[in-house]
Amino acid sequence: MTDQAILPPASAGLAAASRPRRSPWVEHSILPGFGVSLGITLTYLGAIVVLPLIALAVRPWELGLSGVWHALAAPRVAAALRLSFGLSALAALLNAPLGILLAWTLTRYEFRGRRILDALVDLPFALPTAVAGIALTAIYAPTGPLGALAAKVGIKTAYSPLGIFIALVFIGLPFVVRSLQPVLQDLDREVEEAATTLGANALQRAVRVILPTLAPSLISGVSLAFARAVGEYGSVVFIAGNLPGKTEIAPLLIVIKLEQYDYAGAAAVGLAMVAISFGSLVAINALQLRFARRGKA
Amino acid sequence: MTVAARPVSSARLPGLAVLLVVASALVMGLLVLLPLFVVFRDAFDKGLGKYLAAITDPDAISAVKLTLLVAGIAVPLNAAFGVAAAWCIAKFEFRGKSALLTLIDLPFSMSPVVSGLVWVLLFGAQGWFGTWLIDHDVKIIFATTGLVLATILVTFPFVARELIPLMQDQGSDEEAAALTLGAGGFTTFFRITLPNIRWALLYGVLLCNARAMGEFGAVSVVSGHIRGLTTTLPLHVEVLYNDYDFVGAFAAASLLASLGLVTLVLKTGLEWRHSGELAANRRH
Image (cartoon, rainbow over all chains, first blue to last red):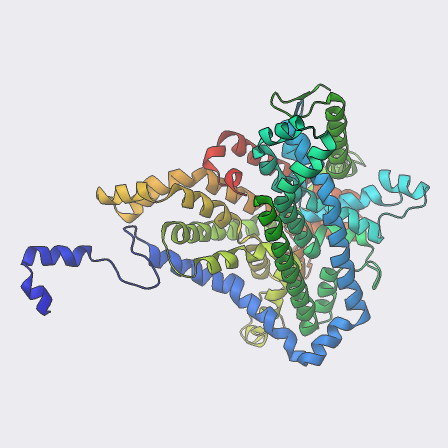
């Protein structure tokens, strides 16, 4: 009050008008609407994401620690979790060479139909999962075009772990291709040419020059494919066969437990899936960081 | 097929190029395109008449209507949220922003089944609010509200993830200029910000809508599969398929596949024409 009394009236008014809002939480900005937009965001996020996740995190413990352990260690549940995470990892690993092949072809060569082929890479994203599920089943069932072919050489595709694996490869492919494409596009060709000049052959260039540059985005694409595959339901549930302990995936087990009104058990499986996925993503991130550092060195 | 290495390509072996292109086409054809082909082949397996009968069946029509209704509620809500979230995240600096971003991304890494499960844990018969809901005769699970909630959760990040990087790139100089010249907040948003983000907004809404209409796992958990009442189109496909009505299932699936194809064409068109105004192409 005393400070203001000393200043001439005009500049006192100006100072008050342009005085920045002092908050340790938000920097001053001339734009309006921070409070409203943040309020909407937090309210909506709280109701749609946070509250439901709290329920998921809390409900399993109704069973007590040992109850949760028994629910997860039950042979049927443990087998489903093993199957889901194991096959997802294998499918994501196969997506790596397939993704490199497609991303390389689409960025490095000019051929008729390239842009259409490029657009079609997103088809597994665009096709609703239930549609992909019944279509894949029709293809790989013993009566289907590829299923019959495999049956002739004695391989069971649909209604076996191999069928689940095929569906997971299908839905994971776009993640790897789309992660690699921008890197391959930006890859400095002079580096490759330098390697050639120094006497490196095609194989040496691929393994020692291109692959290390691709590694970080390859890892991130593979981990995205893995995360998607672990939770996948629609495209897998039709082709799986769903035999308990053999071809029953973890998401289906949640559905079955809910149908039996075993909410806490279903929540336990759901929470375990989220926890294992999150743990593997953290591990993959650490791996990626190491590769990125090596790439810079 | 003519294959040529691009002018600056390092591939010196045309033979290798042809081999790789053929291998790529084979992978795409067998793994990705064959399922699409099979959907339409099996839908028309018993002729056009059976196909038309299947898609004009009363249950199919009510499934289509329900799907449109659910997407019609979920997509505008997520679009409005996406714009609000992008506005406060891209235009302001505040603490806790990265935590907020992580939370917005979270639904992408959840299993669709878990996205349905969480609503049952809250509003199911034995959920936290289950008894209260029964006492007040409100139905959420096994009703349209549950389908809408599950769909909103699954498609939650689409619009926000599209807008945030773009608006961060664009900065707020133009808005600041408009405000300095005396424009009001709403005028500035509708005359400056919205035109700047319209293609990215459309892109996000397109992907959000495709997922909302095609979602299966999350809605399957909360639906109860009551024919004609709580079966969306993807659930209708499942019900018919499990009844061994393959023509009906694939006919309904062909509608969804067409939705996917239309989305793909529009999305690709947007990417070709407005790549500069889409964040998607600049990410990674």
